[in-house]
Length: 270
Image (tube, rainbow, N blue to C red; front, side):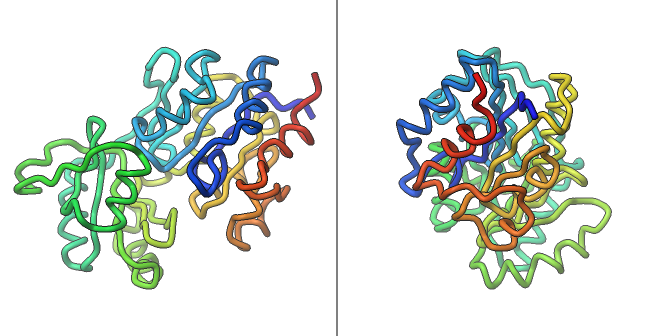
């Protein structure tokens, strides 16, 4: 099977546990692109939060793509063109803010390269800001000052709290939002039907590829839809067992340059 598109999650997949892209992984991805393989990053992060990694693997040079917000937006990193974008329903951010207060969770969303949140000290929100290298804005009055729709909202809290809240939130917003955890401490509130597989499918339409021509690699709960969707779905060895059980192939961990193994084993035929 000739694969034409390689889709990569960021944390725990493209970057290692030190949040770095190793030299050998970067070089293998560059070699793919030099030989005509398209590369895309698919992440729950906002678009700006992936810019450093995209630059490091030269997506700007080779016309690669960023699938951000867990599939809610697709950007050509070379041209800056947004080729697909789906926001939350009108007013949903305000409803979710009230829901976070009711359920005693943190809340964050994104706008114009910033995290918008109830707090700039919540440990899980600070973690996301550091990972994305973007600032946090705390509106004085959330309902008055937040006037955009946004692509997604994340509810934050300790893993036990969000594990219990996930089925409740899914029922509370049934038929209106897609609800799932990306990490134990992040509960993603997405436009209905939107996930990484949805974003990948929209990119395939743009490029004219078939599902059988793509390899998707990831390690988180939010990677499961694209791993199941892909012609070859790869879970990193550092992924949860539930994810590995549903993958077509289990690669070595992100700290063992697992993407190099995938490229050598399944993609490299030049």
